Image (cartoon, rainbow, N blue to C red; front, side, top):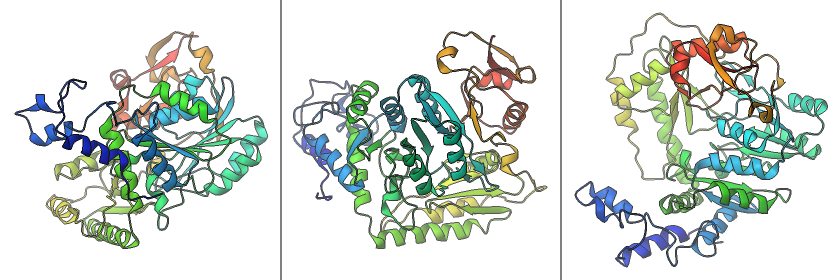
Length: 473
């Protein structure tokens, strides 16, 4: 197919040029009601349209949306691909619900995104969690032998759900794992939120699609020029129930999908399809020059990722949260902070685009970077998985529905079953799972995270008061 086309984007621009008069939703009337505000916002709203004649329907695509999704599948070389307007979250939910049935055993990477766990709950599955190895630099790796061991213990595993790459851009030998899973006639479901750009090939790692995963979700808005919540879902094998996937996408996605997001997904695919070797060399040279400058700041350490678009930065005497505040003081905003470090994500620029790296460095250089007493606290001393590599929940999701819960002091929670997921955010990886028996390690890690200023999703005030939610049994 002709990857020069941008059918979704082009049709919106054509519609705008006709100077249409709106007697339809949305209520801003092509941006008219934003008059007197920022003109840029009013102009953007002119493309915030709905299912008008010629603009197609995401839930029954026949025209420009169908064509844009065919171009997407052609570029990624998949059997079928879809636009997601509710983020990778909705893709993760749809693929789990479509590929699994209530009561199925599923193998799940322990450091998954919370949306994967929500999918398990909705589908009422029986998860078997496999803990990754966590290295001193924060990289996570799923070991092939642990996957093999899980199948030995639980030979009826229906599907395996992996996160590849992790939030920090780290990868591992995923090909061998996919092969083993397929040898056991199990499906491979992959949350590849941070790998939409891997399709470019070297120097990026191979995509889970290229390695043979059955169904894959990607966040186009993370490293490609798509608007927030713009993501892709790819079907990559005949073993995936296509009709069920489409049923759940229709069920879970908004009935009023954003045309701005869909057009940006079309643009993102077009942009990636036209990144040349020259562009890639130019882009990585710019970011490399910035990295070398940052490394010269006093007490700063830079750690590279398998993904050239990502680095982590540490300071010898500041926590990751303190370092994040330092960067933001200079007007430079990292993607996230964890107890030990911050994560920076670089843009995938093309030849001639000069990103303000020099300005960013000057602003960082203007701060005082004098170090205090050096800390020697590896990140895995704060965030680590339990020593048992393969675990199950103490209670099934079905049983949890009918139980009451209560808040108790953290020290009293050890040995009890957690009723709420505890998730430091970002990166959105749960520390304690609902239905999991709370251990002393959980409590110690949680206290340390609270002490150094970690943010949490849900129950924050109770956590700060030293309480955890547990089932009353």
